[in-house]
Structures are given as structure tokens and as C-alpha cells.
Image (cartoon, rainbow, N blue to C red; front, side, top):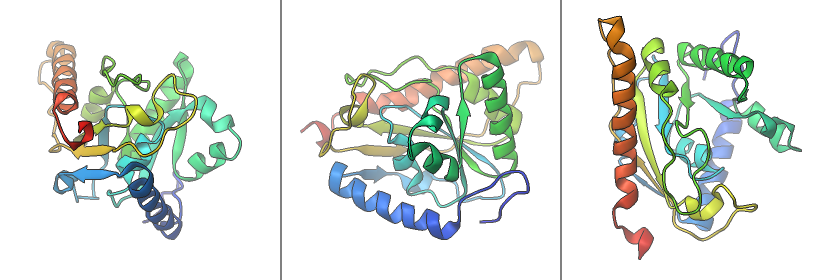
Length: 225
């Protein structure tokens, strides 16, 4: 895992230790199960934008575990002030995003830099965690716009069951609920030739993406048995 002059990544050895601990703990505490991991792109010569629904604080960890490449994460700016956690997430490749325009612009630049550096970047289009009922929040279109500008593929991911673990409104995590992670086929986006059609195209792709990711949330599985 080569380090960029601008972006620092954690030691591959440390990251592999974290991966082993994370996977072991997730299997024991949440019976984590992965589907369609063959859809994860193996080409590390390009950046990759990973676009999941957002059910819990632990989603970025679960999604990262089966993906072997360098990562960057967009995280809530206040999390960097939390004792110990702030230092850990920064070391593992997180950068802050806030709701003010200056913070949003800075996060946008960090995101483009990460993708240009051939890293995998996780962005949650909902912008916040879902509630315990598991209903998806409306998708924002920024992720699609970013993928088009950075010319990188999108990997859609469905997280299911994590709304019972640490959803919005839950003060502490819950254990021993099954969590399932589904990797959809990666998508290559082409920028419309006509500038006037760009906004409409981005909105359509965003809606299609939300429908694809959300489609698995309503399906029956051993999760609900």
C-alpha cells in the first residue's frame, strides 16, 4: 500500500490487524454475513466510490472488511473530538465533513483527492443514519456528481439489519442481531454530452441507485426469521 505525498494511509500491517479483529468481533457479536463479494472491483489503478445505505455507526467498518485496498472515509466532524475515537478514525483515513458551506467544500476537495489517489472512498448518500425502523432516508445527489467528475466507478452496497444495532436515536449499540452486507455490480457513469442534461441525469441515477439499494431491504431472509 503505497503512500501518497499528500495523503497518509495507515500501515498495511496495522490495517490487517484491524481487519482481523473487526471481522472476528463482527462474526461473534452480529453474525455478519457477506453476499456477492465477487462484485468488488479488483482494479486498484483507479479510485472507487462505495455508495451504501446508512443504518449504523459501524457500517464503514463492516463494508471495508472484505475490500483489500487503501481507504478514505468521510466522517461527522464532531466525531474527531471524541476521546480516543477521534484519533483512531483519523489514523485509519477519515476526514471531517460539516454542514456549513466551507466544511462541505473542503470535504468535496478531500474526496476528489482521495479518488485521484486511487483510494476507495465510502460516501453515504442519505447523509445520516436511518432510524430503527430501517426505512431509508432520501438520497442526496452529491455522490453521483462526484463519481462523474472523478471518473471512477460506483460500488452500490446494501446494509441490512444494522438498524437494530446502532441506528439514529439509539444511544448505545445493541448486539447479537444478524447483519448482512450485499455488494451490487459496480457501475460506470458517463457524463452526458449536453450540459443541460447533466442535472436531470444525476437525479435519475441517484433515484435508480436508491431503488436498487433499497430493494433488498424489503426482501425476506433469515434475518427476519
